[in-house]
Picture (cartoon, rainbow, N blue to C red):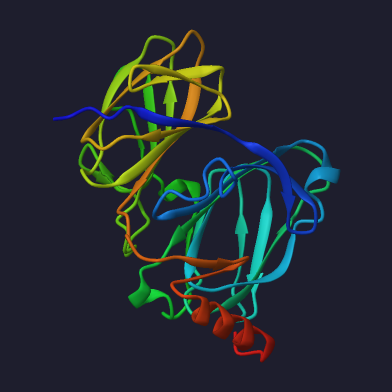
Length: 277
């Protein structure tokens, strides 16, 4: 097996989105526009209600998937098709926007910590106009594994140690892991050959990824390979390790629309204005 290593390092960029929610943009910024099939990665974390209370009022999506992973806090989602649900600590929502949906995500708390991630994943051209769907996953459905001493893995998507994550039916065959490392812990993680991948440290000071220290709020783009060597630093740490099969297709983007050609973007805007979502 060949080992993966870090080829690029990206620091999150402070910005805001929705109705003014403060967040850190890691993928989808000038330093890393995209990492096929990943289009965007945001981390939102604040215990100040002014930073998140306005939320993400109704907005359109077409042509890709949004993945929301909550670590702390309570968010309610809804759409113009009548779907409703709650995002509570440890829960995941994998939304396939497909041909179009109007979606909102609004905080259900007025104080306390709101913390989580939103990842955008591209859809292949053949699936961009598929019917929208949700996979709403409570924390009790996410396997928690201990594949080595001092290592805890929450398996959101993909397979590991004979277990499978609850997310299913995704064209890019994603791996999505929340990995906790105690000081000195070591773990060799198998990842599918050919998948593009990244690691992002979100708690603690740092973790060793591919033999190199990756600091908190720093994303490491991973090389090709089949195995990733992980090790804990001086203090406990947590990181996301995410991988997906690249689509290798043209990408046309305009805000919440991700298609393959500019003509398809113009069509998406026209359909949205005509109320066809």
